[in-house]
Amino acid sequence: MAKHHTILCFVWRRGATHIRTEGIPKMKRIFLFLLCFIAPLGALSAGAHENSSGNVNVSHPWAAPAKAGGNTRLYLVIENDESEQITLLSLETPVARDARFHFQADDKTVLSLSSRSIKPEEALNVGTHHMWFELIGLRRDLVKGSLFPAVVTLADGRKIELTVII
Image (cartoon, rainbow, N blue to C red; front, top):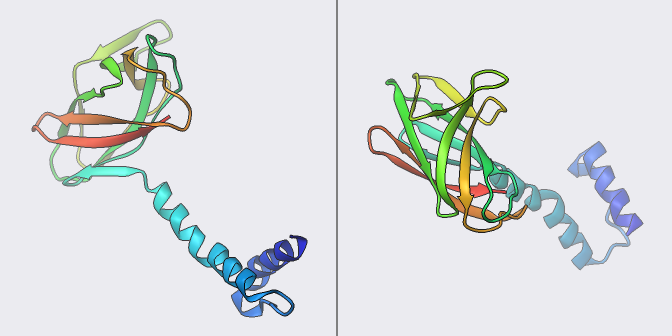
């Protein structure tokens, strides 16, 4: 195994044109090729955790782990790349009885918003300690590494389906 590790480091430091493969069986060379050059392509697509409708993109939806019956926070980023303002109305998911859009106005005041407008070319980060979706009355445990569906609804009737990671 140490021999393979050395070769991989050599590829990273020197470039693919300087790989030395003498003494390595053909199947192991094929495996190394796949590992070095094809596997990173899967990582690129895995990082693109994004859904869209028109020029409205919702990216990186995630929620904190929590137990059934409790509450948790869901975070995401909504980008409006359209020429008109859009309005975020709601988020729905089968894993919770209700989902409310919360905004922390100050240290003691948390408001529940019925909607939020997003100007053209603006991104709304619903992923801070000041703004989040509160999932209320969880119907099942949310376990780290699992997924669940959700839908963001805009005022013009568009619905953007999401896959949320915990």
